[in-house]
Amino acid sequence: MKTQRALSLSSCALCVGLLMALSGLPAHADIDADVRAGGYTDAEGAMIGGGALMNLEPSRQWYFNPNVEVVFPDDSDLVTVNGDFHYDFPANRVAYWVGAGPAIRFEDPDFGDDDTDLGANLLAGFGARQGEVRPFGQVKVLFADDPEAALMVGVRF
Image 1 (cartoon, helix red, strand yellow):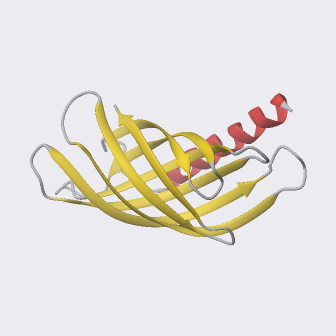
Image 2 (cartoon, helix red, strand yellow):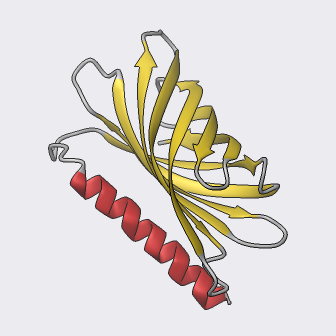
């Protein structure tokens, strides 16, 4: 079972890498990593994840944030692969954003009876704009066959 979980996580990491490669950003673009933790309310499970944050234009207000989140509910496994875009409202020290993006939701990938759904995310968050390590908080709603809401905190670096 641990080998299957590692394969699922590797597949998700590959998907995020492909999303990043397909984004068409120039090689000199700023790319920051993020790690996150929180919970999914409907699945009633803790979540860990990671992603990349890429600026899409010179004014530094539009961002692409591909990410993977692994949820550990009591009775199954849930993995989401997300291609989130968000708009940062102009601010000094704290950024506030709203966004949306496509999502792929994999439920029970380790047990052979997986349920894969396509969906969409709506999100809102806030976070530090400056520093080598920048904390953030975010609320996300995943609209798919089984909708989910997620609350998370994380750091970007």
